[in-house]
Amino acid sequence: MVENGRRVLSNVIHSQVELHKDFGGVVPELAARDHLERLPGLLDLAFDRARAGPDDIGLVAVTRGPGLAGCLLVGVGVAEGLGASWSRPITGVNHLWGHIYAAMLTRPDLEPPLLGLVVSGAHSDLVRMPEHGQFEVIGRTRDDAAGEAFDKAARVLGLGYPGGPALDRLARTGDPRRQPLQYSFSGLKTALLYRLRDLGDSAGPREKADLAAAFEQSVVESLLEKLDVALSRTPVSDVVVAGGVAANTLLRRRAAEVVAGRARLTMPPLELCTDNAAMIAAAGYYAPAHHTTTVEPSLGWN
Ligand code: KG4
Ligand code: ZN
Image (tube, rainbow, N blue to C red; front, side, top):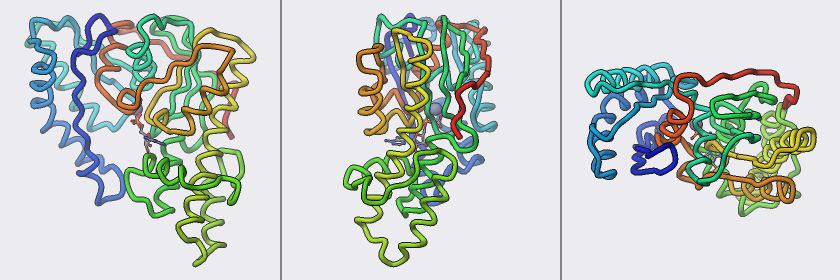
C-alpha cells in the first residue's frame, strides 16, 4: 500500500524460494497456484501493517506483464474482484516500468526526464523516460537477460537456486583477473562452460570463485558500457538503475563510478530492487492506464 505514489505504508512479500528450490528454478504451475493461495492472506497483512482498510484505497494497480501467464492471471483476477467489490478503478502496470518507480519511492524529489537501466530476471533494458508513463527502449539484450545469465552461471558453478545472490556472494571472494572471461553478453555462458570443462578436476573452490568474479565483471561492464554511451550521447540529470539484478554488489559500485559527476544516480535499496508490490502501486498512481512503450534499440548488447 502506497500513499500518493511516494510513501510506502506496507510492502508485504511472500518469497517462493523454498517452493521452487528443489527444482532448481521456477515451476510456473506451482508459482501460479501459490499466488492464488497466498494473495488473500497477504492482502490482510498489508492492510494490518498499513493500519488501513478498503475505504482508504483509491486505486488498485496490478502487474499486467511481462511475467508468467498463470501468475499474471491470478493477480489480474484478484485485482478485478477487489475493484468490483470496493467500487474502485483498476490499472494495469508494465512490470519493467514498475521497477523504475521503485526509485521514485526511494527519492521523494525524483522526477522524469531520466535514463533508466532495468535489469531483471528476464529483461535488461536501457530506457529513456521523458515523462511519467512514457518509456522509450533504446537498448535491450538479445538472448539472455542479465538475471538469467547470472542464474545460469550459478547453476553450472553448482550454486543452486536462486543463483544471482549466491553468485554475488561467491564473486566477492574471487579475483576476476585470474580467470578472465570475454566482455560481451552472448558467448559468455559458453565461455564459462568451456573454461570449466578445460579446468576439469582442477576447478576447485578458488577457481570457481575467480570464475564467478570474472563472469560478474563481464556482465556488469557490458551493461554499464551502454549506459555510459547513452549518457554521453544525450545527457540527462537523473539516472536510475533498478530491477532484481540492481541488488548486485559490483553493479551498484560500478554504476556509481560510471555515472559520477555526470548525473544523479538513484538505485533502490535491495528490498525494492527485487520484485515487490509497492513499486507497482507507485507506477499505477503516476500513470494510470496509459503507459506507452516504444522500442527502438539503437544500442544493442551483442
Ligand atoms: O526483478 P526480479 O526480482 O524478478 C524478475 O522480474 O525477473 O529479478 C530477479 C533476478 C534473478 O535473476 C536473480 O538471480 C537476480 O535478479 N538477482 C541478482 C542478485 N539479486 C537478485 N543477480 C545478481 N546479484 C544479486 N545480488
Ligand atoms: Zn522484476
